[in-house]
Image 1 (tube, rainbow, N blue to C red):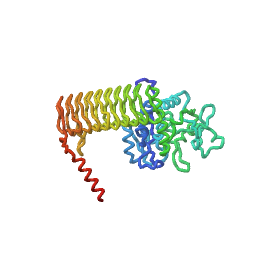
Image 2: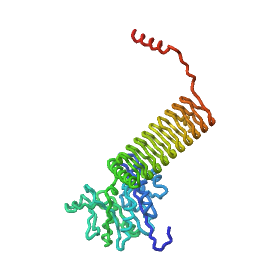
Image 3: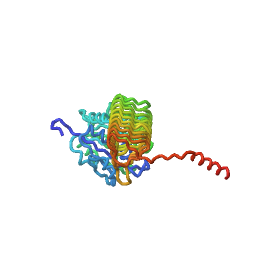
Image 4: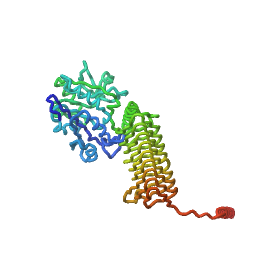
Length: 448
């Protein structure tokens, strides 16, 4: 916390008590996933860039939401009596300064928009600021009625006149005010309505009644869209992916077919990375400059260093590192694997819980058997080692530098550096027996 006497703290209250009823889900709305993570995480990340304190309001028996919210504090709304009632549960956390109330099911609000909201609230004379949008299809959104730049009221669609329904400025529900004012207004909100609930939007009427200046900050519909159903979740995913793809390309990444690439919000793609069509990035991926991710690959929890080529049809799982200029080819899966610089794993292989030294070559069809049904075991392969095609390495096993594993071998013991290891049965050839066998089968078939 700064010691600057002019410093004015700001608190964000995130309402996350909503159930997944319209999503037909047993899980709360706040933990439904967008771009590789729960909706609540997206909003927390952006709000943390703007606000000094965050507090999350959850419902009872929502341990999963509390876990996602950590390390931020949570308060429980034991009875779901409306949005104003939910916000009031966090009143003890308001402190001094400004308070904004956000919604976990509005997960796409950017840090820039939140900053604009706070800046508007802090302008001289402004008592309350709210977020508004002009959606392509205003439908049943509440309309924001303004005069001379100030908000006069918010009118719900069902109560609006034809002239008011023609207004295209719509309420997004997010409010920001001085902590003392906000607390007082929340306490004054009544529940004289059809549902008997305390609505946050009533704060606007209370502020106007006190002659407070109320201002609207406009943002794009894609930022302010609510997510209450599976269909809206898909629309939010599409909007977020469009934003993430554009950001990647703006930072020097080539997406050959942008609409087919799916990113997580924490995906880090450096300049001059090339991503071919139909690639999926799960959480925790870092790709360094000049790497190529070929079509139909899936990456999560991994790091790909400069100049490496991954795919097509490759899968990189968590705790995997691909070294500089390494090659991971088609239908290769890696898990908890570390490939050194220049390593080649080009075809049809599984490498798990393994370290592969620089410039080693893993032949087609190689399998590292890392799991005995109870424990995972490690395989270590030294530098400049060649593992022949269709080999099976049964962990735990160590293979030294410059070793050669003959194709088709099953390796169960350590192999020292510079050694040749053959772990296969001796071939036996029976002259003419193949023809005799086929002739016998043919005769049996002809005789029924």
